[in-house]
Length: 370
Image (cartoon, rainbow, N blue to C red; front, side, top):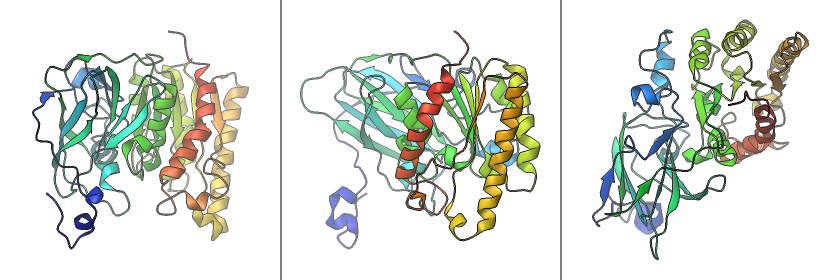
């Protein structure tokens, strides 16, 4: 599908969707070895592109169950000497969002390079009116050489199937292992999920996955990171976590919700994993604070509650729980770092990653030994 001359794409081909290539390709399922799927904690049991188990032992609210089909944080990793890569995707459904591009909510992007030094290559550009697409991602000149390839899954849609097209006869090998087999597990809100990054690789959790060369399990549930005890129990079931990060304050809009759930959530995690570090983050300021002092007062009150809770636990002997206020995550000019006065743009996500990276490195120094 191309655009006619009366549209922007008709005048600028760079604004059109990527057209499927005509050259023959060998199609592969990333469900099969030696491809590696990362970021889905229950994938090895269910082989589903889903952030939570399909039939968990702990009942989920309908909204959380629906959002668990969204594939934020998922990765496909492999090594190949193919100089071509295309992708075929069947989405759960066509998606349309008022303030997030289709490249972010329903697209894949691809990075090339060795562990810890991935470089962005390309993003799927497609018409969001369709529930499926086939898109070339690279066709590199020169002789074939082996490359590490990482693809990031869509942030705000589900994926029914995905296939990768490589040059016929190309070799595929397993990727280099992560720096640790223990995943970082992050629980939060739409901002954790990745709203509203322009493409999947720009979500702050994915930025940190690349920088730390770590698997990150993204349990961000848009509008529904409410501290449900069922989520804490599911997180406690994840095998050998490196650490937990809790960043769900902004979805606790009901009075008393944070005060009720925050200590209980920590207790559930700590009972199951007494030695796993926990990092709690308070929310970043929003533009509304510039115009309504009550909004700022509420944020500061909740910040103080979380800090006091963590300090109390540390005083009682828990030396592996940490707190960091989100007040400075977005910088002094935080009003320039969102798309809608709340959700970060790519600049906002980059600043969040810059601020959280040293915190997470410090917390990971306390992870349990292998």
